[in-house]
Length: 452
Image (cartoon, rainbow, N blue to C red; front, side):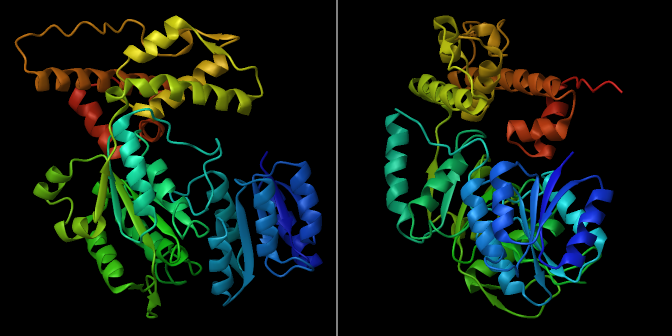
């Protein structure tokens, strides 16, 4: 049962909201002040905190800041009086996941809570790292070190940055490093996956909307351009952004102002834009899926991250980092990496790059007792790393052929792991749902579905 903390000083309203949420199946702790709420946050783990802005003593934003010091990833929704959009924007800049304006219908409250608790938000609206813990770009590779040095220099200026590289190479880590070494480091960092939402929803998320502007728009919503006006927006998978939205984003960046969907008011914005893609820029420009003027606006400075297979010296240090991290998180003794497992990791091609290595290590730490062996890795041990003996092919053709086989193996394994759930598989693989469908069709991969 999901546990919700409700903080509301009006006794009648607090009792009504508690009753509504309990009827929806939530376990609810209700209190009337920030001080009482913090005592509960210290002693319990909540699926969501729902707090009013006006509270005796500390207000809802001050409670949010204090809550983030205790638990930096608990979802937080703030309630505010009608017309107090500025307060809501301020709250979300401090890491609130959403807001709801009073008065509101019970159905709206239930919908907002359900949406957040089930992690349906595509956009990460908080200024925190993912719950697994702070991530570091670990590398001994000279090429990567050169990029990291350039990142520090670029971070100090306000220019737009484009990060290129395969899925799982750490493009968001580089984006966060730029933000955290910039003058905007104390402002919001908001990540948007451009491949994960339909165009019409992305427009609303980018620019916000006014209540009643379209069916389902029951209240005013603040967009990420407005929220991150003093911070950084990370546009991931920019190559999958619909063309009409590219035009609107370009105009917003050029004019430094937006209008919410359904609104007439011009809102000044000044976010820093960092974008990333795993697509070939040349191909995207040639096929017209990426506008040339939009590309040049985004790519004032660009970096290309090398895949993990081209820097084998990084595999063991990254693996050891994740072994330590997951062991601490799981509160178990840190297992050693056996010589055979280490050799296997070094010889594997890592088509999913560092993200795949992270998932492999997490599985191994769960299964291993004292020592991580090859069988704990969950990688097909039948791979013949010396099997490429096709002397009639060019080096480029051999590389392409090997990459294709590695893709087939990884997709097949992840689909089996998710019991045929392609949405979940696409998230694990770090690609869009459409890309995964195309790969399954191209490679004629048999999908194993979950038993009913």
